[in-house]
Image 1 (cartoon, rainbow, N blue to C red):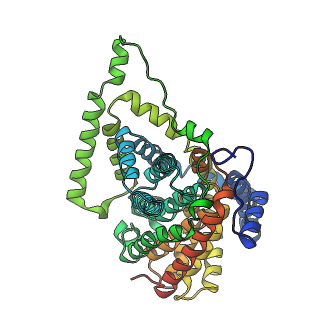
Image 2: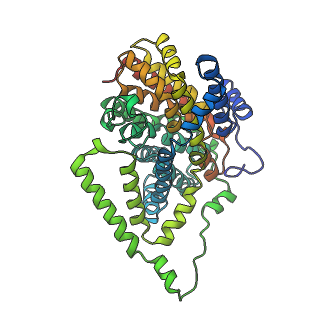
Image 3: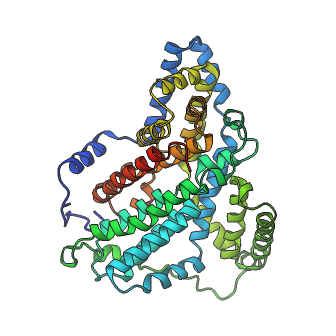
Amino acid sequence: MAGINSEVRPVKSNSTGIVDRFTEWSLNWVPDSMVFVVTLTMVVYLMGLALTEHGPLELLDDYAKGFWILLTFAMQLTVMMVTGFVVADSKIVKRGIIALVDWPKTAQSTLILFCLLVGVISWLDWAIGIMVAIVMGKEVAVRKRGLGIHYPLLCAASYSMMMIMANGPSQAAPLLAATPGNFLEKTMGGLLPLTQTALSPFLLTLMLFQLLTLPLLFVWLLPKKDKALELDEATFQEFTYVQPQDSRVALRPAERWERSKLLLTVLGAAILLWCAKFLITNGVVKLDLNIINFCLFGLGMLLHGSPRSFLASVKQGVGTTFGVIIQFPLYAGIFGMISNSGLAGVITHWFISISTPGTYSWIILVYTAIMDFFVPSGGSKFVIEAPYIIPAGQQLGIPVAHIVNAYSTGGQLANNIQTFWALPFLAAYKIKFQDILPYTFVVFVYTALIGSLAFLIFPQGL
């Protein structure tokens, strides 16, 4: 296993019993997310045949009507992921990360600072959070080698802090709910500003509690120095390799323009100026996907400066977006069947039958966590589920914003035990999912308990 040892697993996990069995079951039976979306399509189609009046061809019509409805949303998320990568991949950000990594002197203080920084940035923007978590985690592994920081735990902390704290203002569901003209606006009864969802007192309190306690949990899980497994020599050399620079002295005029920092710096500064004007005039209440993406565009241009550097980073970032690009039309087709066939009404009544005003938001939390394990895409899945979980909650008197909060919180829980969003981390760290799962499983149990208590104590928010 690269990153630790390419031939032998040098440290056997201390966890036994349920965690080991879960790891084995997950590796054996949990396939790629593409399998899930196709399977879910078949399931919804059969449910439509059994529970609605639409026949086989009518359901195909419903599927076709919905298939392209998510093109705008998919492009918005794709741009967010790419621009987030570009910002985190800039030299200025990397230099700042290195300076922060060098500051703490012990394994415990390094881990705490790492968790806090990843958590805060991921809350602000999950796309940037992914890259900061990876870039900073690799720097910690390299620059603090010999300090006794357990490498699998460091990778687990990187992934879990990013996933849990990603339940912030850049989360797809609350951003979609705040974006004018979105296709769920009628279902929700209007737009939901971020101050009612990601920036609500309830969710801010929950996120702050998790931000302050999760680093302590990882410190508690940290093995003693003599048992810590650190980066192996081969991966250390790979992480510290520096690409040779172009040694040519004379550049063609076109190449000089590609390296010039004038054009992108001016355009990036202009975009950020407009964004600052927008925030001063409208405040965070009016933030939506388009405004955040516009800010990231300008920030990425300003940080990279030259078109050459900017485009090189974009090319790398695009590789992380394939799931959104190809799977969102499939989810949109499912949305079409649920919404147009009347199946949404059937499922709505079922939810109402098992819920009370005191338990509904918690049931949505648990339901979403289960579903997100099999369909790990909060934005696309929200499109499928919103047509029935929101009307059901409205009939029980639950604020729509609190339903969105329960949905987004539940989705982040399941990601700790699902491989889909871990893939870029695993590839970057040269590690396998079963090596971090014992630690992310502990985070899953802890945050599921905290989240359940929060939504049961405050079933309609603060």
